[in-house]
Image (cartoon, rainbow, N blue to C red):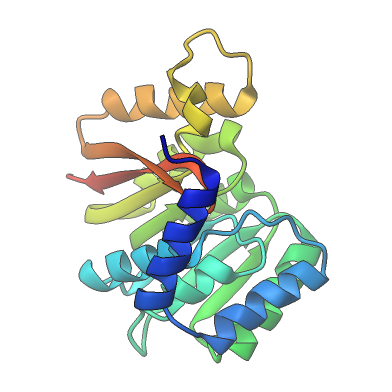
Length: 223
């Protein structure tokens, strides 16, 4: 059975063939490493998937929960039209600073805004402000809060919007009903929430690759 070295090699091949050399993205990764940020950003081919989903959905307004160093934000913002906007939420001031620098270096500072603070608070404020709905939401932050983030995402989207939640497989632990891991508990609660929500059509997919064994949820708001 194939294991991590094979998964790494396959991801490297796909990225070489279909993503290629990208100075802005490589500089973003280097800046994140230099700042000591955890190496948990999406892989290049995963970033390209986010980009393609945003393009295919015609997204004009994108919300990201969990910025880190801005790597995925670059991929998403690049899919926006000239009058589009990406708002990305980050709790850590250091991460936010790195992300702002990376977005500016990529020439995206006019399209992308990093908002600092607890995502739960920022999302609640946006709901209260009745901001214009988002066309795509990417949730990639603390996993115990996934149910709350998803509920808020439903309040901030419209019929036809896409909601993507990363890291939902948890190395297979998501299938363990008796798990005491807060990330697993949050992820299972997310799935139970979505399963009971009549206004959402969703699926979750397992993946392997340079980020290990994990996967993502893709949900469409039905109305």
